[in-house]
Length: 374
Picture 1: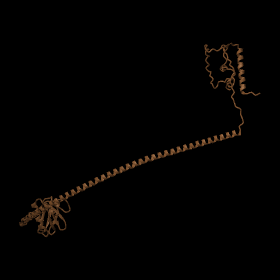
Picture 2: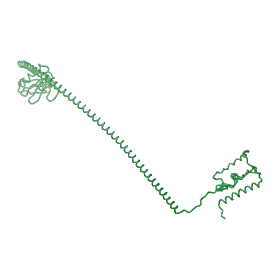
Picture 3: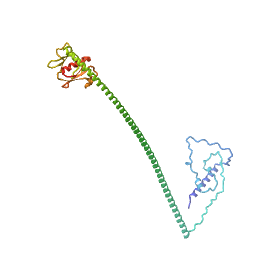
Picture 4: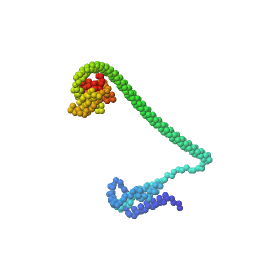
């Protein structure tokens, strides 16, 4: 006997349905027509604390759900009533309304007929054309994809070239700006250097003109000084000539006065001398010794100590000349009544007297002792 799962499910459902009806009849419960408008029954008591409500995934499936999903029911039965737990005896059981069974509608399927060779060839050609069309569509899509990829690559390369060109343009602009800035700085430096050189040339020119002006002024001043010196020299020469003539006249008169009477008190006196080996001036008391084998000028510290002279100057034939300050002894110009005594061996004694008369008398004695003519 061939039994399908659908028939087994149908039989088990009917068996349960009839068993439920027999159990309701055995309990002698009067049928009660459910009135929805009537008062609702009191709410059920609350569940205990340890009670867990079964989720939809853990709820036990109703035995008729599998059959209902496969085949339509023969009777229009409210399955929710069957799925509910048994109610207490005090509550009425609703009456199940019976509906006529549903007649299943069978789908029409045309009878299968064997294909002819022409139909097979036509279908094969159609399949080949479809395959060819699909292949062409795939090739076209691949070509479009490759073309899109190529265009994207070309666009990317073009964008990269444009970015590179823009970067090069920016770099060229920066280099050009740097070159212009460098050229401007160099031009400014050249201008500053030229201005500095021009200022230096002008300063040098001014210095040169100032030096020329100063040189001209110095030459003019030097010429004036030379003229003044020449005039002064001429005046001094004239004065020296007059003083020399006056001195000769005084010396001649002093010579007659000293040697005419043979007085020895005229051959002594005071004089300040500077020996050749020192720079210090020393005041000495002099005594001339004339008429002996050798004329001398003896120098003492004072008139009371004339036993041993401090210096003795031999004069006979050893004196070269008696010179004034303008005859090579300019340092004696500031000393009044001064003169110099030159010896033949190059030794020089510088002297000055207390007065002009004392100087004339000393010159007369020196010239007489040395045998020279003034």
